[in-house]
Length: 257
Image (tube, rainbow, N blue to C red):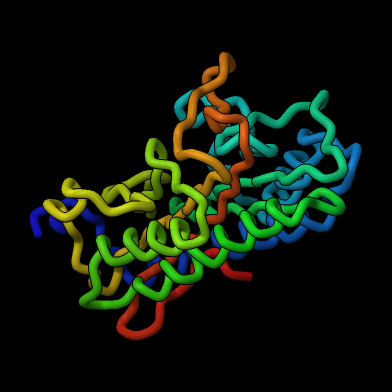
C-alpha cells in the first residue's frame, strides 16, 4: 500500500505524549458538558477549555490554525463543524451543541469532539446523537493490525444509513501526531478512491476518527464567516470524535478520560 509510506508511524513514547494531551482533551470535554445549560454563551465554553489547558501548561490546538479565531469549535443544531465561540450566542433549551477540542502537549496533538443536549431535546435529536456516537464506537473496533481503513469507513457509513441518517462527505477525519492533520484522510464513507488508496493498519498508526452525521441530506455549505459549516437543508447535525492508536492488541483511545 503506497499510502502507508506517507503515514507517520508513532513510537510508544510518542503515543504516550499524545495520551498526555488526550487526557486534557477528555477533561475539557467533561467540564464543558457539566456547564452546558440554557443561556450560557458559547464563549463561556471556550473560556472553560482555555482555563483547563492553561492549568496543565498545554496549548489549545485550534487558535490561529489556518487562521481559525477560536480556541475550540462550538457548533449548534444545523451547524456541522467549525463554529466560532461567541459572547453573543447563548445556548437555548432544546438545542444540541457539538464541541470539538484539540490540545498540543510536548509537541504532539490529540483531538476529540462530542455533541451534547441543552436541557430536554427532541426524540429525533436524541437518536441522532446516539447513532453518531455509536458509529464512532463501531469504527474504533476496526483499529486493529491487519484490518483496513476502508472497513472502518464502510462500518460508519453502513450503520448511519441503516438508521436513515446521512454522513457528511466534504469533511473527514485525519491522521494526527506531531501535526494536527496528517495523512491519511479518514472518510466516514467508502468509495473507489479509498479502495484504490486503502491502508492496512499496523501498530503505531494514530487516527482522529470523527463521524459527522446529518439528520437530512449529506449536503453542507459554509457561512459568510468563512468557517462555520452548516447543513444545506437546515436540519440537525451531530459530531463525535476520538483520537485512536493501533496497538498490537486492543485499540487505544488516546482521548479517553
